[in-house]
Length: 199
Image: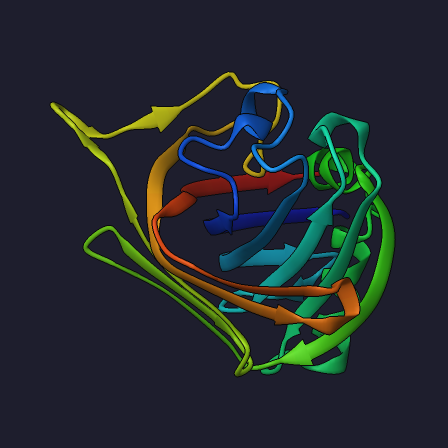
């Protein structure tokens, strides 16, 4: 048993374009404050079908991303059953190992786990993420001469093993009192991607 998750990523932060964290440099404003959301187009965790669900985090990263100590609030899709919620949290707390555990080892503190209505959509390359009523972003990728501009083989990735599409958030709002954050900005870093996580 284990997990196999396939889907899309939307990520936005308050760094400029491009976010230095992806290449292991310090964030632009000394800290990085981000929304990261993974939508499962297909997903199985120890026999539990999680297809169609989204899990997301808001995170305060206090310095260089590779040094960890992230403080996060996790959001489980409000459409998840209790069994699906438990399965998703087993993966996204690192309990089941694999590539997701390699990523979440950077988390120093899970401040809270909440259920929320999560809207996750990508249409014609434009992404929208909304978590409850206080967290939202609109994203679009940059285009190169042969398609979307990509990052690959970077020291850090939220879609390990896959290229990430570099973009811009035309709008980014996050009120998260548990992390002491109140963000309302335009024109900052955004990332999209496809993922396939197996363990």
